[in-house]
Image (cartoon, rainbow, N blue to C red; front, side):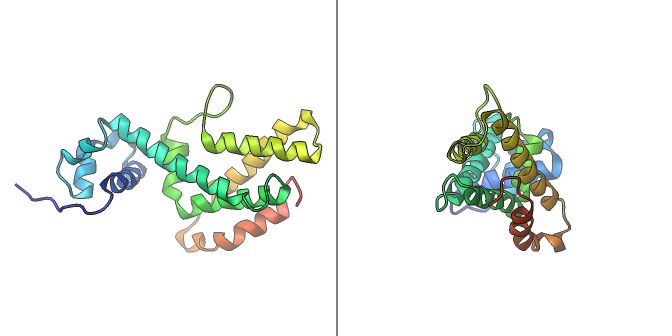
Length: 191
């Protein structure tokens, strides 16, 4: 019987990260806790110490990415608050979070069951919409245009993230410079 390497550190986080990688490589249907254990170099029973099932693992992955993504968005606006400058900083943070973690983007938007809008809770989206409503209120922006403008902003930011993660690896590093430049020149809500 093969002895598996003893895993030091936070095995749960290692398994979540490895699960994201496996899903992006082979799809969620191909993932199993047994394959995850093999990829992490631990016994086949080790994942069950952290996840009761594949579904629990998928839920943990979704939560893991969501918490990190929401924290990045919240942190990005601390200095400027609900202002166009804050929106610019949030837009940059959004895109660069996924440029730095393209596997997170692929999981959240291609492999998860996340839905936004009425009756659904997704913390990054909810934070963004609350931010926009507060900013619009401060600006005296017309109520009839608020939701459409918020969606237009989200679409531009999300679209830019989508394009960035599809870039050649040689180009990925350039996005660190490009994102602020692109968003500062093309924002619908001017800074």
